Image (cartoon, rainbow, N blue to C red; front, side, top):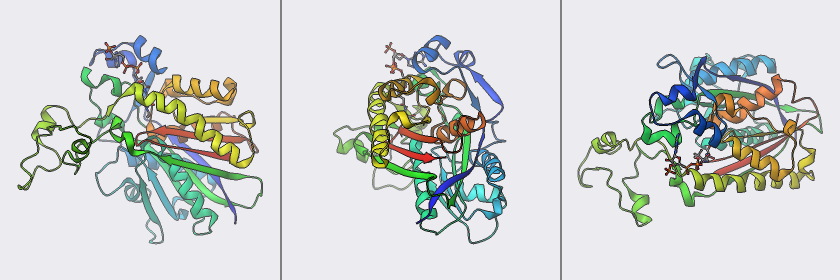
Length: 356
Ligand code: UT7
């Protein structure tokens, strides 16, 4: 079986920079709080009504294609990871296909809903398709336009200050080089705490999961024997129940446990150790989490790429944006061992080891 490799990578971030100070104008927060707790100094917001999750993904894809030496029309499978899709359905994969003018019918498109680990999961899917010889040019995209779906009042400050917009893309192809390419991917999930970091409305749940956990929450649904107002009720609108929520400290504790675990798991499988990693690209959840992981693994500063200071947490886009930046800075070179790792909502977590 052939290995697969990342043949080209690209990223796109919107022009508009939003500083912490700018956020203090709309909510009760401070630059000091945000920097101290998260490391974030600024983030990017897409141009409202001009840019979308899929259009940003397309911008990143054009660069990835150029670097891989292919045209968008050469792509034979699209995997699009996002939690902030343009539409509830259809997914961003087909919208990106249209945006890039990929009109041939052989192409397939798949959307991955794995939040922060979305890109690593998507890369793993691409890896399987390429290794088995099914596809030759798989596009993997992580893209988010969070700014269209955040609560900009003080009520939402613990979530809103963290997130930013952007996109990253990679072209995955087969390689003949025996030592190079994706060495392994490790994927995990545990739905026990699904609601600890979640965006539950609109949805078809009708309060089901909360009732099962012994908690009755009034979402304002009409009686069960009536039709209508199933997804989004007036109560949800009035009380802002349609925003993401996060129990930050709980998520933080899980993250610092799962990141090292899944990295060690991948290294053990291929008989390598943390010190062999040339570049660790952790999902940019919080600078404090990355620093914790770095310390546990005993890595130097030059072995870890962080850019959350500039872009905030871009969820499914954070790993490919960081990987692309590291590549452009000449910090990911042929022969290097690159480790991608992510943890987030679900909870889902994942890692990938790549011999570049
Ligand atoms: O990418 C997906 C995975 N996500 C993560 O891994 C995120 C993990 N969690 C975190 O990064 C951190 O928990 C946060 C950065 C989200 C929050 O930091 P924290 O140190 O855990 O703060 P906290 O939620 O415990 O809140 C501490 C205080 C609270 O006030 P009181 O109750 O102590 O008076 C919050 O109301 O900070 C308050 N607070 C804020 N104050 C100013 C929460 N958000 C803000 C804010 N500005 N933006």
